Length: 351
Ligand SMILES: *[C@@H]1O[C@H](CO)[C@@H](O)[C@H](O)[C@H]1NC(C)=O
Image (cartoon, rainbow, N blue to C red; front, side, top):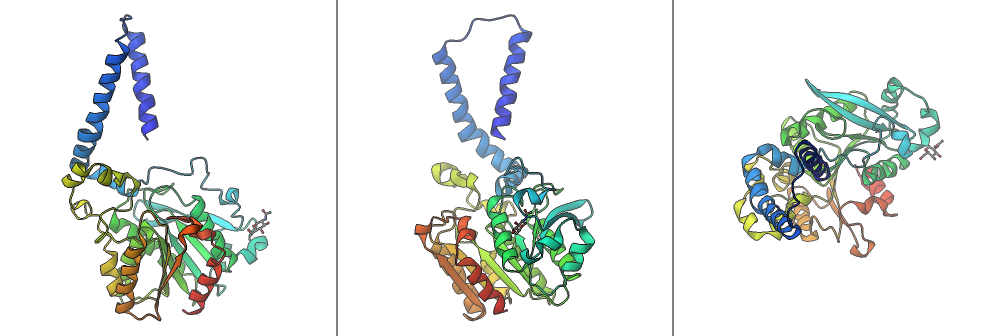
């Protein structure tokens, strides 16, 4: 985004230059000073003020859904990422909201799946294999490496995997809101349940997606529906963490004065994700996965959440598996762990 506006600036300047008679160039040092002041103005005044004034900006900073990483992926061609047993499809979450979704069948069926259409995939969903709905974190699309990585692990284990882009992300339409993301998750769940017979349906939330998963689980509990299982990878706790999930929030720590201006950034802007409260109400078996070197969510935070969930249910139904910091998985990378398939398989067998 920044780069693009930079380009616009320079082309505007070029336009001025060609449009007007040539003037003498300003002294380089004065130009440098002006620039410095401009940067200070933007960093300390313009951005914070916009931040308070414009809820839309908050939305962008929380979800960073417009940042389409990876950049050069055609979302209609999952096979380009060697997901050759995957179909790209679109579900209507509510009127005017279309969600792009990748649906991958178990790897054992990859040959059979070549060239098949949506009805074949829909039919495959009732083959008795567990079905995973993967709710991804903020920034980027369903094609991000670590998301594809999880889909491959699950598919190799013999599970179906659905990976939606929430509204406003990837090629999905609309704008993200906390309630909207819940609606999107339920849309995928209902689509699956209408086709999956008696198969297990498990949610896997990552980062922001853990907030969406627990919001969705609680909403369904209130309607008398309990999800078969919920995996929470890199779960955050907005109530106890001063530093929320978005990389942009380096602002809070780098500039203490700025942090003072927004004491309750989450609540004020209706971005709540009350995961801890949700965990008290949930009735599904839960598996927390967390890397000890997670730089977004420190381990003690997830240990607290584990305690909350385990005392609301039992230690039989709530598990926490951690990965040593020396492995370098940070916030996104634990899909690479060779022990992961076994951990997931054991959880699924316990359901
Ligand atoms: C398709 O995917 C499967 C599973 O990942 C892989 O084993 C196979 O080699 C792939 N086939 C082709 C033709 O790319």
